[in-house]
Amino acid sequence: MADTSTLLSRQLNERINSVDIMRGLTILLMVFVNDLADFAPVKDVPQWLRHMESGVDGFTFVDLIMPVFMFILGISVPLALGKRLARNEPLTKIAGHVLFRVISLIIMGLMDVNRFSGSLGRPYGDMLNWPHGLWKFLAWTFIFIVWLDIPLKSKLAINGNKIARIVGLVGLVWLAVVFRTKSGGFFYTGWWGTLGQLGWAYLFASVTWLIFCNNRMGIIGVFVLMHSAYLGMGNGLFHENWLVDLIGKSALGTYSANAVAGLYIGTLLREKSTHMEKIRRALGLAFFVGIAALFLRPVGGLHSPSTSWSLCATSCASVLWILLYWSTDLRGWTKGFVHIRTIGTNCLLIYQLSRYCIFIYWLSGLTFYDSLGENTTTGITRALVYTLFLGAITVILTKKRVLLRV
Image 1 (tube, one colour):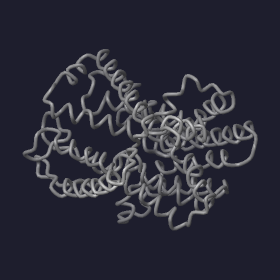
Image 2 (cartoon, rainbow, N blue to C red; image 1 turned 135 degrees about the vertical axis):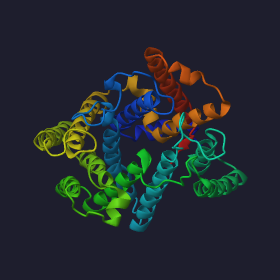
Image 3 (cartoon, rainbow, N blue to C red; image 1 turned 90 degrees about the horizontal axis):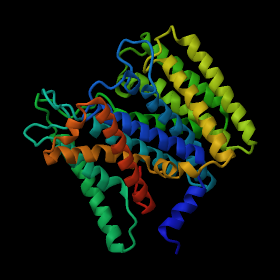
C-alpha cells in the first residue's frame, strides 16, 4: 500500500496547477486581510488593504477576493462533477453530494455570522453569561469533529469517528438553540456569511453545469440572466418575495454569477483543445465582461455587490487564471508554488483554523495579539506572520492527509 505522501503526490499530479494555485493564493489573501480587520483589528490600515468605504464608487483588491474565490469554485465544478459522471455515478447520487456540500457550507456560514453580542467593547463570539469566545470555540470544535477527515485504519476507529460526527452535529444544533446575545438576540439567520454565500453559489453553479454540461452558450445565458435578475431585483422585481428575501439578492445574482462564469473556464479545461485556444477563449471572456462592466457602471456604481463590480471581478479573475495557466500548466513554472498549491487543495482548513486559533486565544485571557494591532506596521506584520504560520500548519496537515472536507 502506498504511503500517504505518495498518495498525495499522485492526487496532486492529477489536478490542474493553475486552479489549485489560484485557490491557494486567494485563501491566503483572505486570511491575511481578515486578520487585519476582523477579530483583532489593526489600527489605521491603509485603504488599499481594506474593503472600500461605504458610499465610495469603487473597490480595492480586498473587495475582489470573495468573487475571485467564487470564480475558482465555478472552475472546479465541471472538473469535479465531470469525474463523477465519467464514473457513471447516478444523477441522484451526484445531486446528494451537491446538496450535502451546500448544507455543510451554509451551516458553517451561519455559525460564523452568529458572533455579534450587541454589547460594547469586544463584540465577537459572546453569548449571554458565557466566557468570551466559548460559544465560538465549541462551534468550531464541533465543526472540526463533523467535517475533519483523518486517516483511520481500524474498524474501531472508523466506527468511533462516525459516532463522534453524530455527536458533533447534535452539538451544533444545541449551540444554535441555546444561543443568546447580551442584548437578548437569538440565533441569527438573516445573512449566510462567507461560507454560506459560497454554498448558494456552489448550488447554482452545479445545477447550471448539470443542465448544460459543456454547452458554453447555455452557461453564458445563465450568467447574463443572473446579472439581469440582480438589476431587476434592485429595481423592485420580486419585491417582498419570500424566496428572494431568504436567499438574498446578491446570492441569487452577482455573487453566484461569478461562480457561473467560472464554469466557462472549467469547460475549457475539460475539452480537447490546445493551450492557446483555451487562453484565447478565456481572454475573450475577460474582454467582453470587462466592457460590460464599463457600460453598466452608471447602473449601481462600481462597489460591492453591484453588477459592474461583479463583472470587473470576473474579468480580473479570468486574467489571473490565464497568467497562472500559462506560467504553471503551459510553461511548467510550479517550483515556487508547491506549498501554495497544497494549501489550495485544503483551503477550507486554513480558513477555519484562522478562526479557531483566535477563539482559543480569547479563552486564554491573553491580550498580546490585540496589542500588536495598536501600531499599523506591527499589526500588518502580525497578520502576515499569522497567515504564514497557518499556511505552514495547513501544508503539514495536508501531507498527513488531514483534510477539512465538505
